[in-house]
Length: 78
Image (tube, rainbow, N blue to C red; front, top):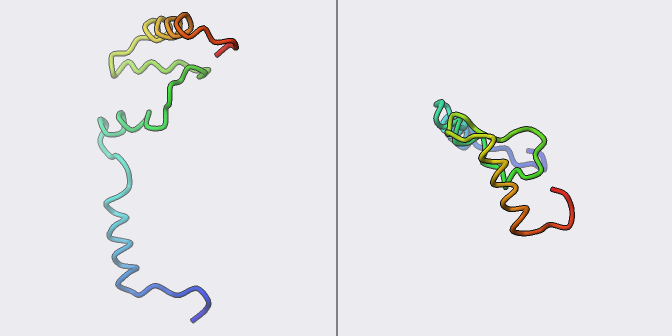
């Protein structure tokens, strides 16, 4: 064997079997939920972040952005 220890056949088979169960969302609702997992706030996003399928409206998000702007009075632009 080399410096890198080779895995046993059992470990390799277990890894393959596990990978079949951890491939991410497969249903439409699961994909919808996971598409914003990494989104922190989106205030600096260039594209709109409203998700019509979640009943969000761009106007509401813009109003929320302005509410934050007025409340926190940032020195720099978003």
